[in-house]
Length: 290
Image (tube, rainbow, N blue to C red):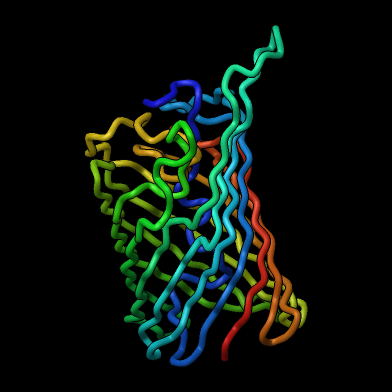
C-alpha cells in the first residue's frame, strides 16, 4: 500500500449505467436513449473489510458521463458508457492538535474507464421480456495518478461482464410500470477477484407520462479468487478489489416532452465491505430517439 493513511474504497456499481431504461428490454431498431449526467461522491467514512464503519480522510470523485443505447435491430442494442471527465481528489490531512498539514491534498483530472456492451433480447411476449448482455470494461482512466500515485479514475484492467435480465411490464391504473431482475458475472483481470452481481428494479411512468420513477436494489459479491490485496488499490477509486455491498438507488425523471427530459437520483450502500459509507448523487439530461 503506497500510503496507509490515504485510501478511497468506493462503490463499484453506484453508477452502473446512469439511465432510466429497464434492463430486460432492448431498443427497437433505429431507436435510442442518450444521457449526459453528473455523478459525484464525497466521503469521510467507509465500510472496512469487516463491515464496520470507520472515518477516513475526506475524498471525492466527480464524473461527467455520456451514456447511450441504440437499437441495431429490434433484438440487438449497443450500449456505451463513457466518463468524459473524471476528477478525483483527497483533502489535506490536518493534525487535530496542532493544525499542521500532515499530508497535503492532491487531485487529478482525466477521462474514466469506459463500457461497451451489446444487449440481445430473446423474449418479448405477453408483457415479459428477457435479454442477455455482454459488457466490456475498457481501461481508459488513470490508475496511478497524482504526486503520490494513489489517485485513480480507472483501475487499469480489462474486464468482461455477462448479464441476464428478466422483466415484466404491467399497468397500475393509468400508470405504465415495470419490474426487472438481473444476475451477472464480472470476469476481472490483472489479479483482481471476479464478482457476482445481482439486482432488482421497478418503476412507473405517470401524470400523463410526465414523471418516471425508478427504484433499484443491487449488490456485488466478490469471489475472492484474485491475488491482488484489497488494500492494493488506493487513492480515489471505484474499483477496489474484493469490494462487496448491497445498495439502494432511486431515480426520478421529468419528461419535458416526448424527446427530452431531466433526472436526479442518489445511491446509498446499506451494507458493505471495502466501500464508502456515504451517499452518491447524480443529475442528468436525456434524449429519446424514436
